[in-house]
Amino acid sequence: MPQRLIIVSGLSGAGKSTALRALEDLGFYCVDNLPIALLPALGQELTRSGADTPAAVGIDARNFSDLTALPGILKAIRDNAVDCQVLFFTADRQTLINRYNETRRQHPLAGQGGSISEAIDAEQARLAPIAELADLCIDSSSLNIYQLRSSVRDLLSHGRQAPTLVFQSFGYKFGTPLDVDMVFDMRCLPNPHWDPALREFTGLDAPVREFLDRQPDAQQLFADIRQFLDNWLPRFAASDRSQVTVGIGCTGGRHRSVYMAHRLGEHFRTRQDTNPAERVLVRHRQLAG
Image (cartoon, rainbow, N blue to C red):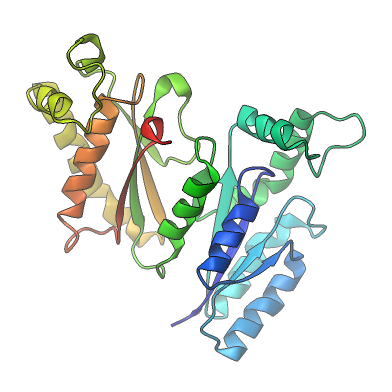
């Protein structure tokens, strides 16, 4: 089995340090802010030693090495029989600003008199070469520290095989998640919110599920999404993807999207023997916390 190396990067305040601590708890040997020029030597050492301990390396925008060289470095590491993944953390601008204001920490790229927003722009530009190479991207905007650690454990506690399939419900009024690979819109379906008897329930509750089960459009949309994923998930698996995240959205993210994400998750979990995804996860952003 090839040695395993996780490269952890992302915007400051989005969760990189939390992820490294979670990986350390999983038994990874972790090094933060390693110059990328030293990555090939680390890959060679992992192969030479034959150690069973996986490694994780944090890389941030302060890395003085030229990040545009990273694609070639990753290829050299993988050619050396190391299973190398890139994990990238992001969050929306306002969330990052709020986190810095709450902690009163200075952004690492904030110069004298520079705003946090300007520092975020500079960091996004500097980290673009890593973001483009990411095998896994986690949007931490709606996650607290415990949920973030749980997400890392869910995604990385197993060795890489077939991609993990994630269904994430959300509300459009709160913004589209940044880490989804595709999005399906449930706003064309009848909205339980307008029925006073259903409004206080969610798409996980029997009254809402029974209501949507009776809607022909909901059944047809479920069948269409299921067929689309049945047809195309094998292609994602063949392209060496580690994760496929399917966004399911409705207006508020509590009824229709939750119903559909839950139902799709149930369907693909029952097909694990033939399903091209190794694991199936379901998350409901607007129900979290």
